[in-house]
Image 1 (cartoon, rainbow, N blue to C red):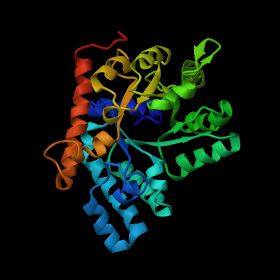
Image 2: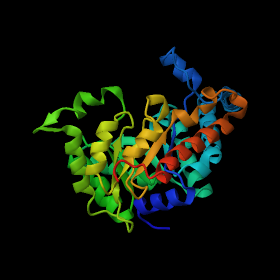
Image 3: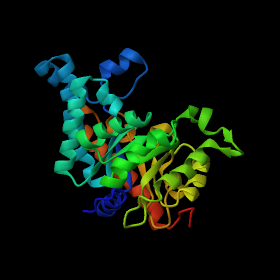
Length: 320
């Protein structure tokens, strides 16, 4: 297996015939409803109750999350190219949550051929960024992470110099995110260009020296599925950078339309993330419940994979 993140991602895409990134956002009902009475999505309650009874509240919640996540990985492994846990959901459980995250990462590496992309959105001044990178790549052994560009190259270079360059790790830099208020800053004009365009051009520059054998950079960009016109523009700028495209399903991104705009003519260059749509499919698909939640998640991952592949097979990619 190649040591380059982009090459390994392409290998995984080709092995699974999938461009789906499975986001892992394990939510606990008690925590969700405590802060949002209208919350809808959480891991099956019976898993939490069993573990809390065995281990007590805090440790039990973390154990439940670990069990749920491992079972999710097993359920969807055949239909996804990469896994993306969001670190926030594990940090919210305290030290036990971070142990669960480390155990999950080890489980994925030891039991699948998939990589782990941690959604952490880290960056700071140089020395702090370096220590963020050490924690993520050396201690937790993640294969890639999301990075925030707001501090400029000071926040990015420790990731590039020590881990992308020397160890073949991957980073995805926030460019045009999927959330409704992303335009507050990202759509502002900077010398007659939108800020997300400026960031995209920097991503190309920062990643040009870190390409794998297949020609794609180990420096990618986060571009939301919820903004198709901007996605179309950014795909042309970020020709040889992988796009991490969140926002399918619950956030409103249409998988087929986004696939047409987000992929390159070679059928590569993008992975399409679904988190809640896959994780909590049992709460959204008629005929499923907590008892058969794994089957629902597997079905949703398979459906998304097939939707994206249909676009490739029809050669209906808008960047042709």
